[in-house]
Image 1 (cartoon, rainbow, N blue to C red):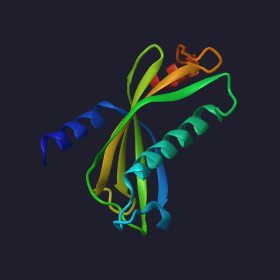
Image 2: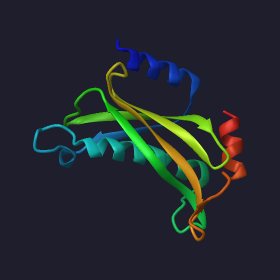
Image 3: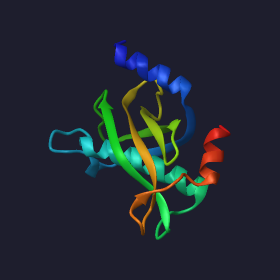
Image 4: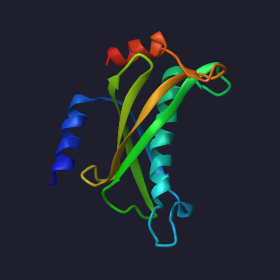
Length: 147
């Protein structure tokens, strides 16, 4: 196991599991080389994040304030191909006044030992009208600290 994989496991032990999203790889997710396109990995993480936010706090569409992503990264560990099912795990990391770090692990749904990718995204809470960051809502902060 390489050192990065080891640090990922340590990070996961310190982080709190927020949500698991079961998703299906679609034929159209593949590129000309016959494997899932790298941009789709970010969509899988996004779908997991949106499912969690909707379940925990309700839809943020047309809200006065809500989450935006200020950065995202992905470590591609193994090729994904159609047909397959995946399980995307979302973890909460360090929380700031206006933000929270999230990490993700994309696994094979039938064999959790197979890790396709891991990555992360920083969520910042924003006042959409002012176009500025604002404090995380108390309900979100309480939820994250209560894990």
